[in-house]
Image 1: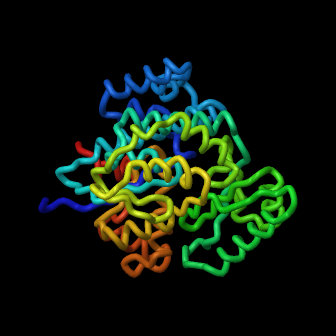
Image 2: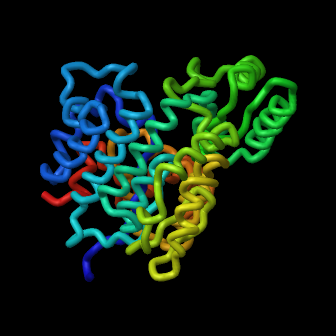
Length: 347
């Protein structure tokens, strides 16, 4: 135990397997037999194998970001990185995730087997793609310095509520993501928001391709189909604490597997996901030496850092304070970054 750094592992969600990640499984997944089992399962269901998707000559937005493909790729990439963490140097004290990263967190924490976790992620991703109800966009409320701005956040959320109250409009907070608000709704709701706010950095508000209205009531039919397809036997006691999208902790030895299934295939699908709260609780309850964000991708690291600033963790009140703290000894390790991966993974 001595000499090991404690860590909370953070599992990424949709939108993290992109062009730069093509070949990620070939480069990093440590268990060829397990990958072959996942491939066989997909092929039996008439889906492209993960090896074929990951080994494609070119990245295709239309192909690789579809829910039925992206969810499985991200789940397996995350699992591979989790398995690669060097337990002689790192003591994992808790696991959390963003959005569909919750499915990955279940497996990393031991609440599902790798195969059962794959069934959950692949099934839910497929059901989301088949239904493709509504859409998502992302918009920042923090400035470049990351200084907390609760008034700006409240102003934007009031606008969301006002638009949602209009006839024929649906709009809600999908994910509270550090300094970003991920909003979801129908076409009328999304377009109304896009037309009401001032553009930021020439990029925001940014519509997210191949994303449905995740974490809103619009997903009630998808959640119902998920409960029909995924039985209670897939869920078990976790071996590690898990922090969910409400900031609630699921403790080893004290988790009701039925309640865990109800949350995963209910609230987690149809209600707002508070990633910022999950990171705040992880920091305050477990006080880790570092946060390890598994791959694929590197985009979730910013949301983790912003969440820690918003929480005032270790006195950090802005971006400069975080960077200074990060420069002393890495507080945040992104396994998708080649230069940071060795800080978590075995050699």
